[in-house]
Image 1 (spheres, rainbow, N blue to C red):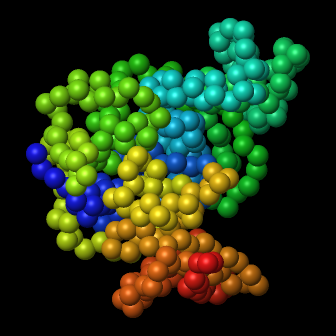
Image 2: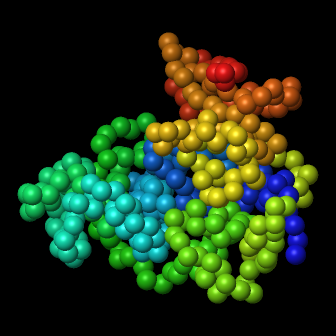
Image 3: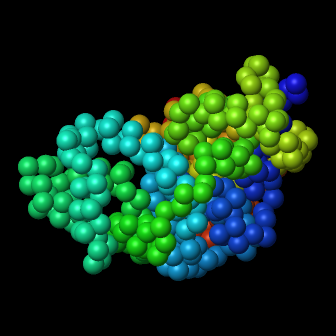
Length: 369
């Protein structure tokens, strides 16, 4: 059985995540290949596509959203993901157990729907959303009018878990504000949820985008449990490997495994990028000692940059008096060549994120001790 070290796993992940070079794909093609992009906030998917694709423009993703070819919906790990319309309809039924578990796991949500027949909630939500998309508060008020003894916010959030509710534009459009409004996926996309995709298909797509990986990795990414039986069922369709600690890994036989010495360019990853969230063992890209700095207590996953393929620090953009500044916070001393490459790539990033600012600067600041 082949053993893969951290650099081999790193280069495999970067290749499959479109991070070893920029690719001439459309935004829709990239989103499908990545099996969606985590998207709690509107901006991160734009940056994530910019760092992966050649010539990506804000308008391309905005047009996918307004044209209903892509949507933002609670999906993997019960978190908001940007996915193609096809994947929304195909994958949402597969991860419904994850959403159900989230509702049961939050006392306020569970109490709001206790002893309430799922079909009754389903019908009430669809009736409330029949005329126009609603905010969480508006949906909760509509549901509480039917069940006045129940918590409106709990009802609305439980509905978001039980039904596939998509966030409709202008939410998710670059530079446009506004409250989050929901519609059912079926009404927004004009098609019913799919029934053809299987969890086996989901596992195979995960490995194509994130492998090689362990069963725990697949479960971490999807939120699903008991996937060992799925891997066992796939049997000969998978290749068995191991990492240097002896963990059993699985992969597709034809998936790329680049040379560990393959050069990896500097790359800027946005907040919540799935590269940092798709494995139980993140050592292939992140030093575990740095995790607490990136994964904050309030649920934010900080934006990071890669040097030689591994997370080497965090970044943010500040704006003041007409100047947009990219602030780099490296975890350690940056080699001169890497710093120059980051400054060059950072200047391009500022041009993408703040084209309206007259002045752009890149600043390197030490992390607080």
